[in-house]
Image (cartoon, rainbow, N blue to C red; front, side):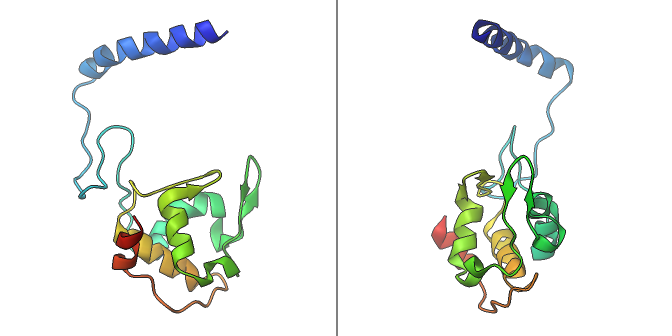
Amino acid sequence: MKRFAIAALLTTLAAAPALADSAGPAPKPAARGAAAISGFMAHFPFEGGQAVYEGVCQGCHMPGAVGAVGAGAYPALAKDENLETGAYPVLLILKGQKAMPGFSMQLDDKQIADVVNYVRTHFGNHYSDKVSVDDVKAMR
């Protein structure tokens, strides 16, 4: 079984340049500093904390930040005492934890500060001290 999977992978990789050439050049993501990556990962285009939450976070943490249980456990962010310290969600977003991937390559410092500030002041959270772009930059 493993030999078949390895052979299939090698065949796919060997064919990739020919497939890419026949489809024409791959589109390149818009440059956004160090966060722009060609190929598999690209910078997310969302602006503002609500837009970042709805476009990136809501798929797992759900509308209303109520969390979910299914193929994995996605914690609720609503009324979350763990958000009291702004550094905590910043580090989770940058580095990830358990099943949550880090988003340091897809989100820039402003987007991360915006979404952290949004989540910390919505969904029953009332943490009014702001995380700044410089705070996020220092934690990268």
